[in-house]
Length: 343
Image (cartoon, rainbow, N blue to C red; front, side, top):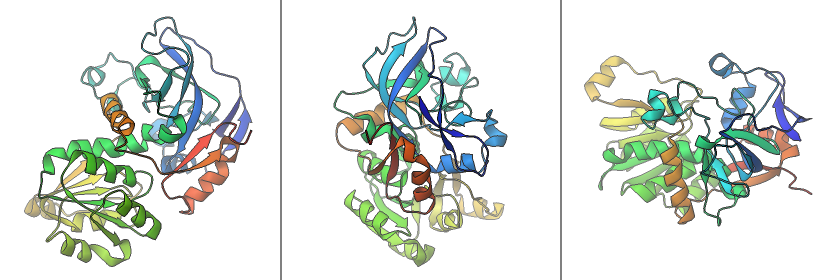
């Protein structure tokens, strides 16, 4: 089968012919990939940023936002059957450790992370397990929802955590209305009554945010002063879906006292004097992917039409071109790789 594999860091991945995965255990599930999302994390993987954390054996297959159809299952699998449409939670988890027992899939002590430390879904087939597949409403097509497996899940997870902080009359700022941020805007609209202001450097991204229900849009060149003006002294919650190139300091400055900065995008650093944290009583909150239940809830909103992905589709064999487009800022929404799209 065809697969997109990293051979060396700081080099473009290659499209390789590799053996198909096989069922090895009773809980295994093999999925025919209908679509794989392209994420900025994939670029960070190629840059080597994840090597010290995940330490994968090279070469391996990229792709951690995956959806498709069940092809084959192990002897113990009962929650899905061949032919079912599914989306995969990004992590393959054990179900036995204490974090798993508490429903905190992202912190499983025995997990693997397809696309980051084992073979992922930028391929024609992928192996996962029964705990990681969510059976979908038949009306949902993999190409329309694959990127919700990580980008959507991460954005939804952050908004879900912030619900107690955003009752009616509050204000939320969303920094970045790209692949994650435009899902964050829709999640805020679906789950809260907060006023939403979106910041981005792209006019197209701001136009998209407005069409999705953002109350205000601000070009990032206007700075934090404009945000303080619009929010009448600062946001109750800032969701930073970029996390680099200065958005970190903008986000902290745009908070009101006792506000919370939700760090979602990454690559930069949050540098705040401890006296500022104390005197303003502000919070810095990390967000890692989301839980299986978060993904189920997000799929429900998607089936109801409350969350939709804005995408640009590429054939799997055009993965390198798609990555270059993402790196150059030429993608609005999310890039989606589809095996055999041009055939």
